[in-house]
Length: 253
Image 1 (tube, rainbow, N blue to C red):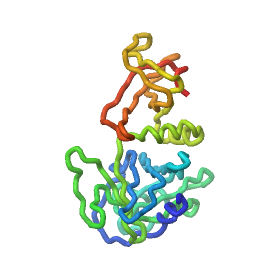
Image 2 (cartoon, helix red, strand yellow):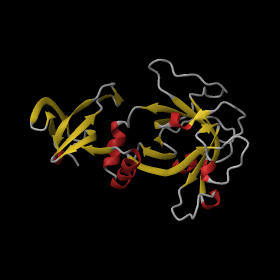
Image 3 (cartoon, one colour):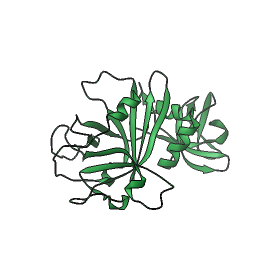
Image 4 (tube, rainbow, N blue to C red):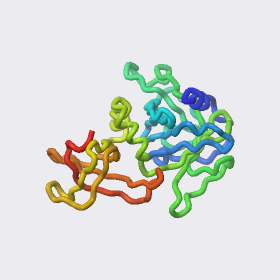
């Protein structure tokens, strides 16, 4: 499945839209939305875009496993100019390119870099299937579409944070966890005790608590204490609230 999804990202976009997008608008966490005709619901795919880099994370639902591709170097092609070097890439445009980093290259000539995938038409808040742009409605998420080689648009919806089941899978795969934490500058952990009470401040207890296997973001460290953020879910959906507090470092893995 992952191989097929990656292959689908190969080709040169043929859409003739002249409406530009800005790379900074693509920053964040994005959930891939399979097209209506797809019957493959066996995975989740997430794109993480940070400055001029993209990392893609896959979660296999049946195996509950995590894998990733990237990070890639990304940027738009300038108008009326052929890309010769990575420094030719610009922050605003329609045609987005993806290159695999190469630490051994003597300079940034693209001849030293492998194309992670060739160019695509990239539309921020673009309406799928149309050459139009519109701002998100109040309370609605942002989204972007990629179009590779004139195929049906790939649709991605912006999300606030990673769902709990994804963070749980990350915490069980230390290599992928370290890779994503370094990319996002976020630390993740999972509660290992049966019941962990939260503290308003170190040594100042509250009535709130977390349960074993609850995933958290670590937002501050102070000696043997961690300040964490938890995203409560109901039937695997975020309820829109967060819980923050201090826990003992020994309560997480």
